[in-house]
Length: 124
Image (cartoon, rainbow, N blue to C red):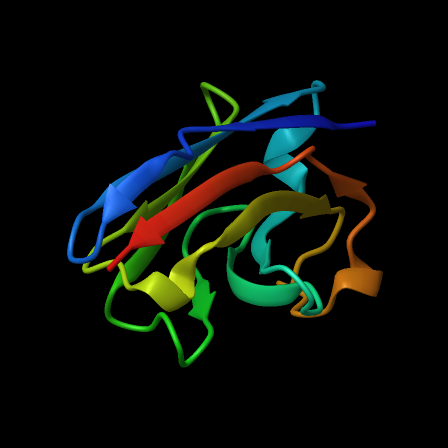
């Protein structure tokens, strides 16, 4: 079992940077791939990016590639989503998720554990 808690979301202006954190509990966190998703009002939850259990592999949605960076610290049981050059269209609730897998899934149905989400609002 893995419990996830996101933090760091807030209101920022366009062009700003923000770092979200995902704190995990559970002894086997290092065995889980981690994904970040977001959901804007009236839209489906979408994949933002993910990182393998080792941290060696990362994947990003085209909409955030080059602006967002995912990392993790297995010793501290923390995952991070660094967001730069934020745009109003990045406004959403951001979720971290974990999957006991050697690959990084990109769909919501493949993740077993989810955090409660943290709101990111980007004003123009």
